[in-house]
Each structure stands twice: as structure tokens, then as C-alpha cells.
Length: 458
Ligand SMILES: *Cc1c(COP(=O)(O)O)cnc(C)c1O
Image 1 (cartoon, rainbow, N blue to C red):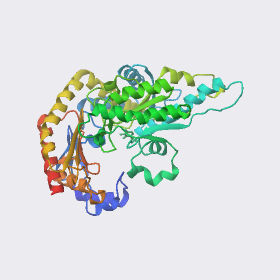
Image 2: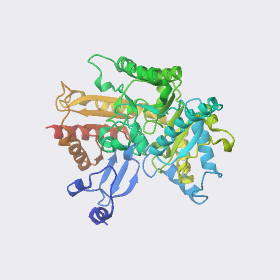
Image 3: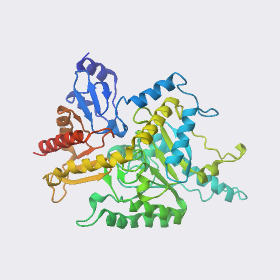
């Protein structure tokens, strides 16, 4: 078997995600035969260093022996069971461990099966929370007056592709087309530090930008179910970053205005930012936290919506009072996925992962210093194991290349030729590697990106 054996078969039946399929008339698909550690290998025997963790999901390498073994063991015992009325050991263990590892107060774990569905559940849960709370208040009048219906999110945010998640997101490329279908949300200017003024620190810029949030929360507090944010890094929004002080200010404001805070840690959770969860950088606990992607080490679809006792209790009532959260997905808390997630947490516990990541992040910083002087790189920014390079036409004025030129794709193609999988977001080239990458491999991806950017901007 060779790559070419698959490509025509694939193109005659498969519709790929997030792709203009016509691009594949000139851009070859890459059929992957196997993976090992940071490497993916195709049917022609060519290897690619997975510098983006296969869309940010992989933590400890492909075909990781520990996770493989855990899944094999579980497979012979039980592959899946419904989670309504039934339960299983991998789900219970995982929920216990997530409660312990997530910030204090997140004491209940609701499983779903992918990131977008976790966001949907979080939105419905926070809407329904206020409804249930107000039911108590309106008991005598029987009215549903004062129902909260609004969500607040940041500009340039991304929370998934299903209609509710898309509505609270703000990346025009994914959202605009479907605008007429989407619920109305309140969008607040992002603290995105790419737009700070010259000489302004990340912290000062983030503090300054918070005034927009404060204003919205004080004006609309009675209508708002929740604020949803991606802590520290807006990943799909071109890896734009902000300072943890914003998290602190937001937590404080949500408390003052009595509004729920949802932290979408789907991309940044599980050690990506240097701590287990990004919220820890601001020393805050959200009311709801969405987890997915790295949760199974990149093996299987699974997500978790962690929430406070207070939220859980608002739904806990006699059935006839109709307060239950009647929300489910068929594969909720899949047994094999939970086994993979438990094995992933085992690795965190035994391998000193967070300390190692701090060292790897330092290496990433050092190996990308060369980009600071690149004539077409306006910014090198980093939060832990996420490092992004902003490729621009005019460095001095931070003028971007027109998106129609698709220069990121030139970098993508060049890197593939060199055996590195980079998948730029528009004009932003980023590294988000598996945690098993070595210092030498970080140097390789950095050198390849440098050459790729130089060629694409020549
Ligand atoms: C990827 C992502 C999602 C959506 O997860 P899917 O599993 O792709 O549906 C939601 N929020 C953030 C921050 C993400 O990065």
C-alpha cells in the first residue's frame, strides 16, 4: 500500500472537516499508517513531527504504551454502557480525580462526548440554573418573570461549532455564514495583548480592557446567565493571549454582579499552560469548567462539565417539580474513553509532567528567539506549551497579509516537505507539541518554521 492507493478512494467518499475539498486538487491528502511518540508515518514511509498535537489533543505521544495498555485491559472487561441509571468504575474514578484536580469548588462532574457538546451543556446548565433558582422565588406568583437569557463572551473567542457554541464564539470565519441561525449574545472586547500599545505590559493591557467587561456586567447583570471565556489563550482565535489578572478581575466581577463564570479549558486544560488548568494562573475557581481535547491524552472523544455544588443543588429536587437536567448524549462517559483519561492522569501523577513542561516551555522560548528579528514576524508570544508567531506583511505597522494570499498554507506545505506537521491559523504559525517532545525536536520545528516563514514572505 502507498499513499496514492488511498487518496482517490478517500476523495470519492470522504468529506473532511474544516476543509475546502477543492483544495485537494492541488494539496495532497496524507494517509497516516501509524504513529509513535511525536511522529506520524504515512504509507510511503515518510514521517511527520506532530508539532500541533493532532489539533491540540495529544499529550503523551501517539501509541503511548501506558494508555494503549489501559484501553486494552478495559476493552476485555466492558466497552461501554449507558450512564443513566448505570455507572462504571472508570467513570467514577475519573470523576473523583477530576474533582480533586480541578480548582476548589468544582465538585460535580457531568460527562459529555466532545468539546462542543460540553459547551452546549454548560450553556444550558447555566440558563437552567437561574430558571430553577427563580422558580423558588416565583413559586407563589407562578410567573417566570426575570428569566435570564443572555450570555457574555469575548471577541475573537472560540467555543466549538455546534449552534450554541458557535453563537458564543466570535471567529468570523466559522461564525458569519450561520449568523442568522444563532442566538444573540453580548460580545465584549477581548483583552488580546497583541493589540496593546507600545510599551504597555500584558498586565496593564488586560486590566485596561477589563473596563469593557465591567460595564457590560453592571448594565445587564439581571439578564446574564453566564460569562464564558477561554482562560489565557484564545486558541482558535489565532493563539491570542492575555494576562491572568483578567481572570481574577472577572471572577471578582461575576461574584459582585451574581453571574456565573464558565471557563472553557477544552484547549488549555491538562498542563498546556504550565499548570494543570489555566484558571490556576489567576488562582480562581469558575462555577463551571469545560474539559475535553487532552482529557483522554488525544485517544478518544470525551468531555466533562465540572460544576459547583451550588449549581448541582439547584437541580436536585423531587422529579415532579421538573427541575432535573434532562440532557444527554449517547456516548456520555464512554467506558474506554474514561479508561484512557484515567491512564492519562496516571502519567501526570507519575511523571512530573508539569515540571517537565516548564523546562520544555523554556526551550521553546529560547529556540524561537531568532524570530524576534525576523522582518515578517510581528510578535512571538507564549503561554507555557503554546508558542505563536504572528506573520505580517509590514512589521512596523503590524499590517497583516491579506487572508486571500493564504501564506500560512505555504508554510504548511514547506514544513510537511521537511517532515514537520504545522497547521497555521491564517497567518499565525504556532507550536503546540505533545509533552513528550525533546529539546532537539523543538529546535527542529523552530528551524523549519523559520525557513518556512522566510520562504512564504520572500
Ligand atoms: C476545540 C475547542 C472546542 C470544541 O471542541 P470539539 O471537541 O472540537 O467540539 C471548544 N472550545 C475550545 C476552547 C476549543 O479549543
